[in-house]
Amino acid sequence: GAGSTAQYPSGNTGGANQLEDVCSESSLQTLDGLRSCHNRCQTHLCCFTTDPKLADQNCAGLIPAGCSAYEPCKKLIFPSAGTEPAVSPTALLTQEETEKQVYDACYFGNDPTRVTEELVTNCHAVCAQRLCCFSDYILQSSCRATLGDDECELYSLCEQLVTETGVVSDALEEEENEFSVDELCIDKVTIYSTLKTACEDTCDKRSCCFESDPAYSCYDMEKDWCDEYEACAFVDYKFYEKGST
Image (cartoon, rainbow, N blue to C red):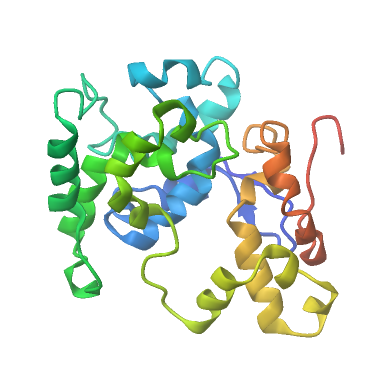
């Protein structure tokens, strides 16, 4: 598909090709892949909600071009090759049954060897409709306020699929988790290459804020969330507002 160019310093392109890759079926069988896909998609999960409880949150009518551009994200909510389940997967289960289903599919404790493709796939299937519980709270796509903490808490083990608090792979990643964007993205990035990398990796988590292609940009839709990452300007990540050149 045609990609869009994001305003990334290194001529890095965002857009369609990247979404297709990070949200491909093989990518979604790994924790890293799920997290990357969720990072790219969390602003647009509202495009694909069919759950009756979340009907008011569906934004497909508001941003049709954006929803069309983010079509690969649909696999995050409808994992079996993007087919929509007829009923909400948990509609008929009691709270206890739901919690048990999530536990059985997702629990791996502190044992990374248990994280197989099978576990990730099964856990994703159980969690898919409720990943919106773990999107950043400030986003329109977050469903925590609509569903309530009680329901989201039944799915608490699902959070490890999409947030970085799970298994940290190296020292740089640990540093990125520990420090805020304002601490990592400072004028010293021009001197220290590890700091620059940590800053860029952090800014990448909100890459849609810096997209120049309007279909891929989430800046107008989630301005407050994007503005929290203003410091990314230190590595030349710029916001593109509608009508700006």
